[in-house]
Length: 413
Picture 1: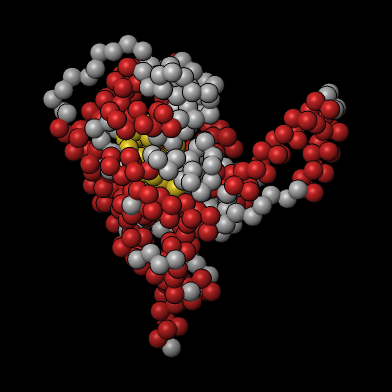
Picture 2 (picture 1 turned 30 degrees about the vertical axis):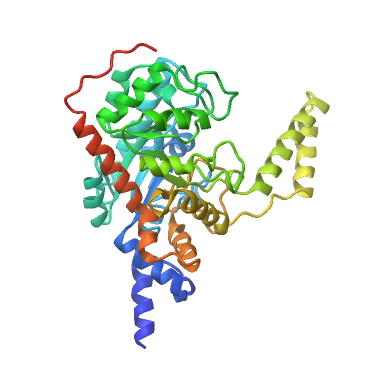
């Protein structure tokens, strides 16, 4: 009877199925996340809301189950609480093809969405600017909300714009997205002789000075190493995994992981199926090749292209990807960088599909349960859930305090 009462109490608190909490690892995961809620490094919900609803996102009930929307989403307020999310870096993403003042305008519009839903739902969200803010807010049951600019082109080569983003709540900037910018190399294009220019180094210095985390997801390995050689503060990878497990350009090479450890940084392992599973990556490459073949073969015949592509898909289902794949990448980062240098950055609502079992923000306890099942201790899982990010953020804040008397750099791109 006592056991059944305990389970009933946990069900009321978590909204998880009874079968899940009968699993001792799930019960332990809930205990872990009660002490240290999830702090996720990257979620594209703001862009998904804008893409689905435009300005009418204000009229949507963001507590409703967004899986029932015409365009289903991976995030909503109810599921954030079910997933024990205590802190979230919301991505304010602008495509790398958008540059100049238009990129700045689009970024401000994305920032407005985050600040808008925080203001609309004050019982569920609160803006955070420091690690201390996150610690305080997560104890209240709210989601501490921070912003991440996903591409250095979004500052339009302007340090004043960078500083104004910081004033609006941005606490990291990804140095590139899928294209090089004027001062840093992306992983998705051929490397240039200088992966980080003098102006790029000035950007890093200014981010250190104001306390904005440097995010090395999306950048080339040479840019990673160049940044790690000059930054005074810990870096993060807001949504990247381990290249030693899946050889994808978006992942962190094995020889860089020890440098991240020396820097005090954190690799926040992502869920993107094609990044974390080599068979899935090969399938996606084959599918892209087939699409190009059909475009050339049936030029100007869109119906025939569609029919042929659907036939290929039916004959070539994508390889399965699951929670275990994500756990494998966490383990690889731990192996080469240490338990203090890994976190979680799901990239939810920025991807078309997820690993099975990690379909939305409500599923973080299942990932923690998998790690416990593999022999990770509860204290180690607390570090992975959010403790490591808090430590890196506090270290970056200390660097900024030490640089507070310095003037901004005067360097042109």
